[in-house]
Amino acid sequence: QGRRGKKQQRPQTAKGLCPAGNALAELAAVMASPAFTGYLETLTGLVPAAAGWVQVRCFRPGLDYERPSCTQKAQLDVVLCLSAKPEAPASKRQVKPLPHSLDLGGGEGYTDADPEDVNVELRAPEAAGLLGGLAGLPPALPVLVRLPLVHNTLQLVLRDSQTAHYVEPLASSSPDPRWEIRLTMPVEDLTDDESSEAETDAAQQEVHAAWYRAHRLMFPAEAQRTHVVHIERLLSDSEISELMSEVRRLQQQRLCGQAVRMEGTKQGRCSTYLHTNGVFQNRLGRLSDKLRRTIFKLDAANWKLLQGRAKKDLTFRTVEYHEYMPGGQLTSQGHYDSGSLLTLDVMLSDSSKDFHGGALSLPEANGSATTPPMKKGDAVLFVSHKYHNVTPVTAGKRTVLVLELWEGPPRTCAHRCTIMEPCDYTLDMSLSEAAGGT
Image (cartoon, rainbow, N blue to C red; front, side, top):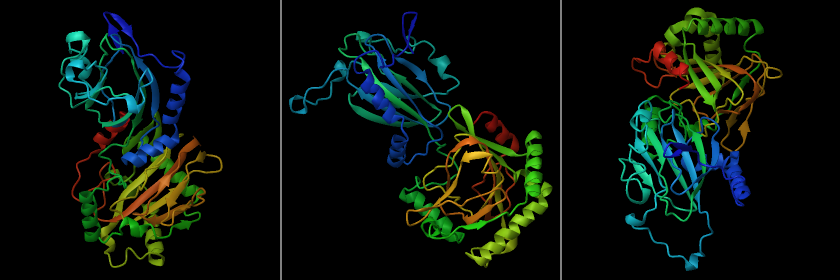
């Protein structure tokens, strides 16, 4: 929001404001498209956590600016700045940086800020100096980075919840307003425990490689060449009913850790960690034993990953009850269950009537993808380091049970743990974060 005196001003949308409105709207539609999101994923290696939103805005000289504001989660700011007037042909244009004294403002900046305190500390733009200085220009602010206004340039900035963003006012003497098309795209938490090919710098690769060698794990490239085993009717309707009834009780009693993934303003996926404090084994011991026997039997007939390992050391690292609502998905490129040996995915919903979309897809080394036809009670077992995704659910609710077997101590902490040492992530911590949608 902008302000002049006490009168509030809002950056205007382009449509209907000038003859260029339709062209700006077309560009905005491109930036809002799935194809452009895919381009950004490839360019940055970041994974969208929810659908982004696009704004077309005009900041008028001497009038409009944006107050410093934080975001609740990590997000990618994608901004295309456009000139209000056609630029001269390149052959007639001198490209020179303006000296600081001629900078007309209109840039944007990022500063360190506590999201709970930023509105207190910067309540009045005048107090923060945003409208101070000669010609209405802001004096130097203690910023992390300042991006001067550069026309016809696409800018990408990744920021976390501790970083505030603002747009400076333009000097009254500026001949043109600042036009921008802004895409705000929430991205997966930068400290997420789910591995991805985005972590491909040399140092990180070597850390992973050392871990794989020490624990006799398949490298992801090798795992892509392994096949998937589809088990029809692993669980009966009565077993599924017993499981889902018990999970509802556990959720009502708040006895299991939870994680909520947002898709825009709505829940896209809710994960309940049934291994929390050993409740899965304690309350559903027969089911736990059956699924464990199934994993051992199928591994012996297929990959033999468990051969030569002590059975007592092979435990469930995580037991996850996933509920996918419309928009819920797992589309991280190169996602795999790093550190685990085998992953069992059991369908608890009826795909013919309970939901649409939400297909389990496992990319293959040859560029194709395996999409098992999972009916209620069916299961899929695969090598954990094999890439896998879930396409977006378009309607209804998709419910699955996912278990990861690893060579390590049984985990009882309230999340999907990434360490073998004792973990201090408690149930209270998990429930507190889930309540906040983090």
